[in-house]
Image (cartoon, rainbow, N blue to C red):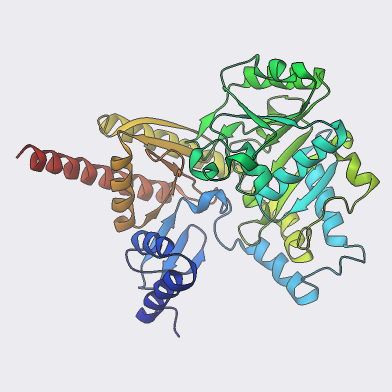
Length: 423
């Protein structure tokens, strides 16, 4: 079947409904206006009906755009040599990737655990903290999102993900992000293993945490013999500006968690980059926490290529950030009754709308105009814009035009509904 065969979309939605989820089929049909994704390059995704869409979404994976040539070349070469590891013999690709990642962060963190998704890195870091300290409690933050596996889910804040499982989600407490004394109080009973935070909460609407509060939490955790973990799976690797937000802020962290763009937008890779003390259980017994596909050669080949490409495009990323900042400010000033707030830094931006209904209408308008963004499932009035660092000024202008058109359409739609209700 050709990628542009109209039957492809129809068959895809049928299979999704029958074998996966009707809701997935409906959401995908809505986003693609009846088409499905078939190919991608750079900032563009090609659809099965021949249209293209500008990708400022993909939940932060495509920092380098789709199919960055250097990453694709590295992965393709490894695919032709040895895509999976024996898990018995030593893997030179994992060793080289670990060394390169430690060098890239240029910090006291010298040990690396590789997984395939963000929750893998969260689970590993928290497990290590509990093993080293012999304690059970982890302080997370209200509004946090750390994943949906059981250990990570205990640290995630939002009811949508936790309902029906609460009795199984022990060992975590959630601190008010404005409460600088929260960690000291949590440590008072002697059971604190770690504090974990996202310097910028992406799923919660691109909310930056106060660096002064994070510094106090880190100091209090360290004083209590507990660990400090910075979850930068969504905002690290220059998505939020620096290579690591926590390290750039001078926070004394014991682990930086990375993922999403770490595989260059080509393969799934995550990592927990840890201090010697936190990593000691895996120094003593490397089989204490393993995953069959963690550190596989195909994914490891992508890591050095992705890091090099990120640095090569870093200056352009700064320009894209500036274009986004000014463009979104103009949007807010033009539509203050619809766009209530804009937040962001680097290449991650959150746009708040007057109501979740407004946000939903804007998503519909963007789908019609060929712009992909990432909604916030736990904050439905907010949309995330995650431009690739390889975007051009023209790409950003196209995105801003699509946003302005969708917001204008939403304003008119909501006004018409008010008239209907009044009548």
